[in-house]
Structures are given as structure tokens and as C-alpha cells.
Image (tube, rainbow, N blue to C red; front, side, top):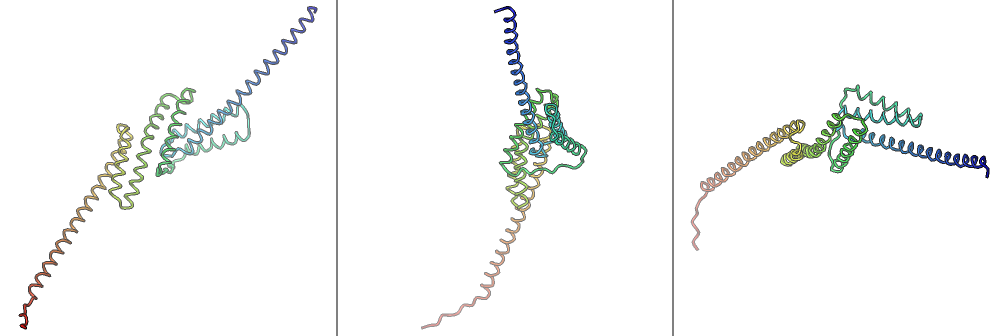
Length: 261
């Protein structure tokens, strides 16, 4: 085999190897793109779940705005990878919703914590959100101070949601006239706040619950006093009536001689 033939053969072999490497790199790039798209879509679903399912009372305005910003950032990354009219429209709608929320002065309607299953679902959201904060911090999507503040806030909400549930049961019992049950439920709400009782947010709630408990216990004491007074008067009236009947019996009685047989 001549030198020229060998060179040509080596070039052909090198060309095949180079083409194979090119195809492999291209496939790796395609798979990396698909993984990136899947990751961004999962993030969109995850953040959208926080926005939609986390009750308003556990989602302060600045935290909700940050979640909006994370969704918009995910849309921007997706549009860089694969421009799409549907994605562009969704991104625009989300940006408009974010602006409306940012400028609105109307308070969002609170969601009653009135079911134990709901409590469990909300707690799972809190745990998921904590993990999301850790990931966002690693990816430099949130600064350390803000991540720490939101994390502490979620820790507080994790216990407050239980207190809110028992406070709901307490109010329900109070409105139905079951004052003793209401006191019991408010005291249970207080016990749920014990792990976070030193936090400023918890202290104000604890004080509020204690004031409500004192008011209800005062009402219960007044009701008991009134009930005891009614019983005393009824007892006096009954005793007086018995005395009158006995007096009348003595005064009206006549003794007759028995007939002799």
C-alpha cells in the first residue's frame, strides 16, 4: 500500500471518528437541552403551586412577588432555549398579574384552617418551600438575608397553622354557645405556639388568645353566678311555699270525734 493510500485511509478513518464525535456531542447537547427544559417546566409547576395553594395568610406580599419573579425568570430561560408564542403569551400574562398584585391595595381573603387534612397539605407545602429556598440560595436566585428571613417565617407558620386550626374550632364552639369547649380549644391553640412562644409574632398572638380566654372565663363565671342565684331563689321560693302550705294545713285542720259504734 502506497503512502498516499495510507494517508487517504487515515483521513477517512479520522473523518469517521470526527463525525462520530460530532454526532455524540450533538446528542449530548440535545439531551442537556431536554433536561434543562424539563427542569424549568418542573420549576414553573412548583412555583405556581406555591402561588395558588399556599394560603394568603402564610404568603406575605414580598414573598409572593419573589415567587412571581422566579416564574418569570423560568419563562425567560425557556424562551431562550425554545422561542414559543404560547410561552411568550403566558409570560406576558404572568407579568401583568404580578404588576396588578404589586400595585393593589386590596387584602387577599384569608383561607380558614378548618380541616386536619388541609393542615397536612399546607405543612407539606411549607416543607417543599423550605427546600426550594435552599436550592434558590445555591443557585444565587435569592440573597442569604432574604432566604433566612423567609425560612424563619415558614418555621413560624409551621406551628401557627396548628394554632389557627384550634382557634377556628374555638370560635365555632363560642358561636354555638359551647363556652367551655371554646376555652379548651383556645388553650390548645396556645400550646401549639409553645415551641415559638419567644418570637415577636407569636407573643402578640399568645396575648390575644389569653385575652379571649379571660373574657370567656369571665362570662362563664358570670353565668355560673347567675345560675346559682336563680337556684337559690328557686330554693327559697320552694321552701317558702312549703312553709305556707304547712301553715295553711295547721290552721284549716279540724279534729272530729270518732263515732262510737
